[in-house]
Amino acid sequence: MANIQDLHDLLKVKADEAIRTDSSSTATRTSFAYGAITSSTEISDINTFRTGMFIYNGTDVSVYIGLGDVAVSTSNFSLVIKANGYFELPYGFKGSIRTIQSGGSSGSIYLTEFTN
Image (tube, rainbow, N blue to C red; front, side, top):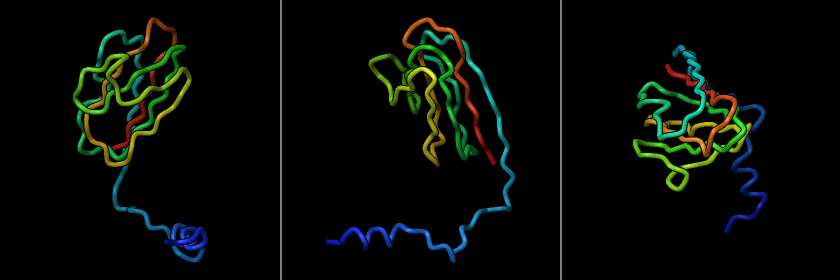
């Protein structure tokens, strides 16, 4: 069994090692805003070019998110973003995203999607 120091050394990024990035691709950012969503609504379609997405809940109620092509409800969801909360989509997820709010609200849900 590995000790804590071994795990630390394994996970540590050494200062003399470069972090490589793919500078050959050009990323595009697209932003969306949605008002009150009271029924299961697709807010992002399947996108094979997606490299990332941020979702910000700028409402005063919880927002229920479903990852994948499923009907979302307050009892069937993948995750909950509380009022004024934030979620970063897991890298590599290309599927559709659906949402519903827990009730009437003021404010909006904001998405920023990155593609290449």
